[in-house]
Amino acid sequence: MWRFTEKRRERIPAPSSAVAKTPVLKIGRVSFVVPAVIGTAGARASKRFVEFFTATIRNKNTRLAYARACGAFLTWCEDHGIGFDDIESITISAYMEHLLAEEKSGGLGPFQTHG
Image 1 (tube, rainbow, N blue to C red):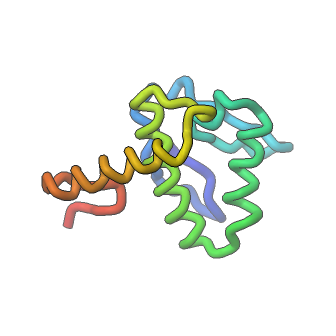
Image 2: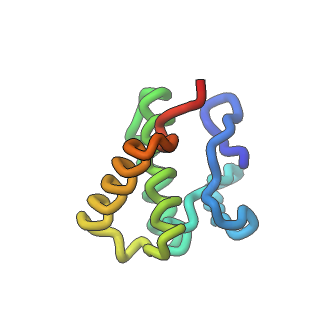
Image 3: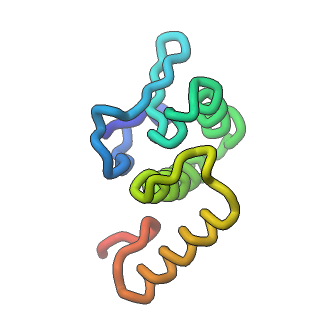
């Protein structure tokens, strides 16, 4: 899936669910793809999500790193049937345990690459 970032397009992993149901937020002439967990929470949540990554984080590399980390977490939530309103600190703890288990098993986590 292609997502708009700065002046170029970058390949960012899409959630494991079908891309066809990926929510899109339109602001003026610009469309933003938001994770399904955010999109199903409504237009206000989608707008706040986009604002966080576009207006709050000025450094491009930081913005991309946060987007990847957030995308990996939200994809995990979606894969486990966890909706926006269900996310709490214990959800994040469970996700961290998942990452640690993947690391121990030698699997690639969301922040590692083949190489």
